[in-house]
Image (tube, rainbow, N blue to C red; front, side):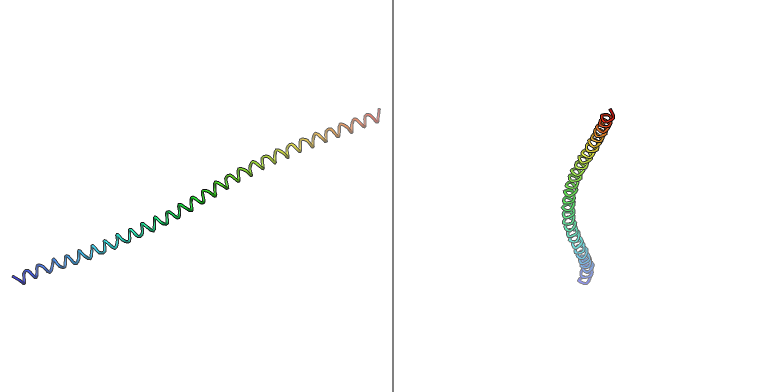
Length: 106
C-alpha cells in the first residue's frame, strides 16, 4: 500500500514541478513584457518630445517665410512705383525737350 501511495504521489510531484516551471516561464514572459512596455513608453515620450520641438521649428519657419513673403511683396511694389516715376520723369523730360525745341524754332 505504501508503494502504491508513493507511486501515485510521484506523478503528482512531477505534475507540480512541470506546473512550477510553466509558472516561472510565464512570470519571466510577463516581466519581459512589462520591461518592453516601459521601454516603449520611454521611447514614445522621447519621440513626442522631438515631434513637439520639430513642430515649434516648423511654426517659426512658417512665420519667417510669411515675413519674407511680405517683404518681397513690399519690395516688388516699391520697384513698380520706381518704374512708374521713372517713366513719368522721362515723359516730362521729353515734353520739356520738345517745348524747348519748339521755343527755339519759333
